[in-house]
Amino acid sequence: MADKEKMTMSKRFAGLKREFGKIVWPEPKSVGKQSTAVILVSIVVGVIIVILDMIIQYGVEFLVNL
Image 1: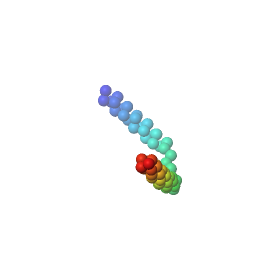
Image 2: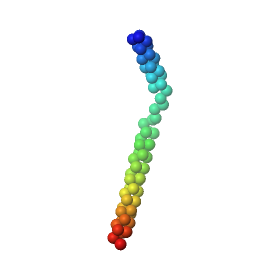
Image 3: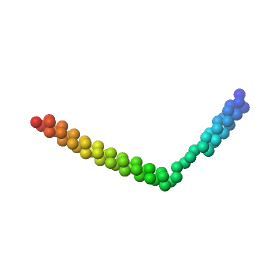
Image 4: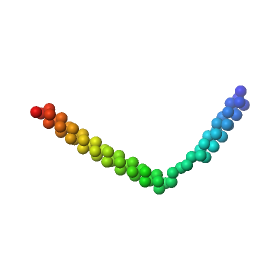
C-alpha cells in the first residue's frame, strides 16, 4: 500500500511541476502599471465615498434639525 501511495504522490508532483511550467508570468513593467492603476482607482473611489458620506451626513442632520 505504501508503494502505491508513494507512486501516486510522485505522479501528483510530476503533474504539478508540468502545470507550473505552463504558467505565463507577467512582465514586471506590466505589473507596475497595473498596481499603480489599482492604487489610483482605490484612492479616487475612497475620495468619492468620503464626499458622498459627508453630503448624506449633512442631509440627515439637516432633516433631523427641522
